[in-house]
Image (cartoon, rainbow, N blue to C red; front, side, top):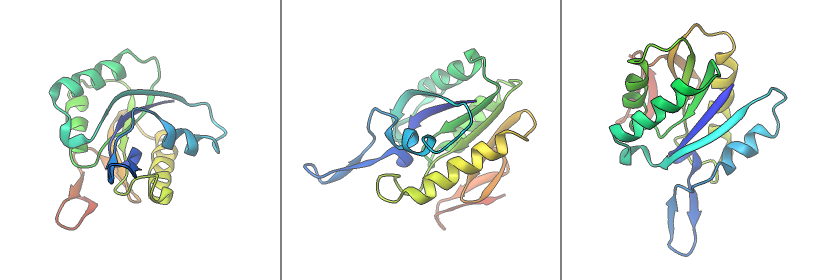
Length: 159
């Protein structure tokens, strides 16, 4: 299994000097969660941006990383605002892999429970899923075109 970290709220930390949240260029939040796992997992960080800043160049970089990986189970840590766009981009490649996008509505550094639960959901689902691209957030998981963020309600839903 490969986990690819692209940044997003999941990873944000508070900078007390600037008084704001930022996306660090590291994998600290995910590494803390993975310390408790017993399965073999590889971790690679590639973009480190808030998803609102991601563009198709970033999505092409993500897609290339996924396509070149020998792993068939891949979890993408991604910001929630454009997760569906990246998932659709990756799905267009029709790879023979299980690819699950997940993230956090609250930064791990502020409250680790939601981010940890979302990552655990993705890891658990990956081992029994058919090849395809999925979104797993807030206790629901499904095909990338069936799970979307309801930005008005502030939660993920089946559509």
